[in-house]
Figure (cartoon, rainbow, N blue to C red):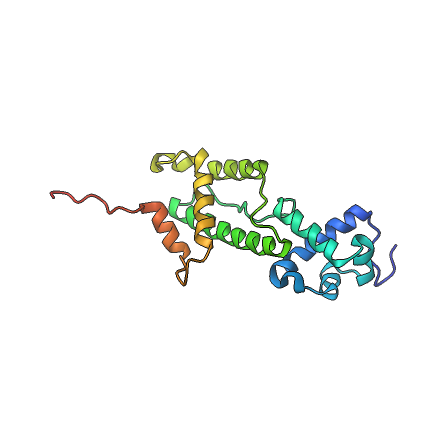
Length: 190
């Protein structure tokens, strides 16, 4: 049994995974300015334990950034969206979650020095399958097949998260655009 103040016995790989999981939120908040003390406190271990697991702070930062960008970190991108919710509510929840994720990917890419998100094809397909399941019941209301909807939503979430001058789009504006597009409804009798 570990003594008070000591971290429980874990394999090196398990200890690294635990530290990475806890350092990712710090990197998103503080970037490379995060201190080894903050890392140790978040992980619930001594600073020496962090250095024994990774050697140095830069190695840890690179490992955490890579895990996040490759999708190995637990991601809340796949929210529990009730397929029975109205279409507009589902879109709002999804767009909000995706925009948050894109902001985090951009922050982490800056920390890691990467130029763009590192999501692989498997992650894209998993996300698209989740989107298809959530929106399958709305098929009759959609112009786009639910199986293809994930790629469209990803494109809009990424594009709407990148600042364009001082213009920022709200989630409501994006959902309105998704629901109603660019055109007004046809008027009768004109």
